[in-house]
Length: 198
Image (cartoon, rainbow, N blue to C red; front, side):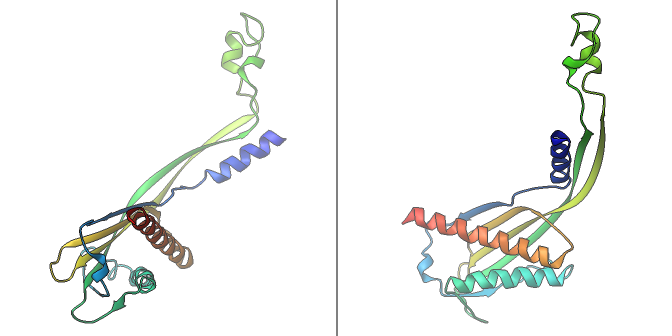
């Protein structure tokens, strides 16, 4: 009974895609970041989700602004020190899961012609009795969020943060949490990078 419960729990846990968000940070090591006091948004219509999903766009922008404000930056309408842009992309992935239910007997328990237990027939019939297997194919969307920071005067890219393998969902609350989780991971990784520099 204990083995059967374990098999059922494993099937439930493996039923859906379970990806950890991957965070990447790159930046210009020679740039003097101490000069950055203000920022402004730069429109990137071709990669923004503003038109296709206005609510998701609002969550992304609000989340980024939250962390910029925590970092002491002020948003201005003109003559900023930096421009901030974001890019969003997604692709469809398939998840194939095979789950076994019931308890099968080990092959050594089968009766074989040669060698008694675990002989020819034992190796072929063992592990079959009492078990069934089913395979399910699930499609889901994987998203990538890229945040770019540009020097407003030279238009040179000085910082990039990327969160990959975000499993998208139609649930607004869950999606908001995923966005915030991705942004928080970016900031935490950026802090660790800066600590190593000092």
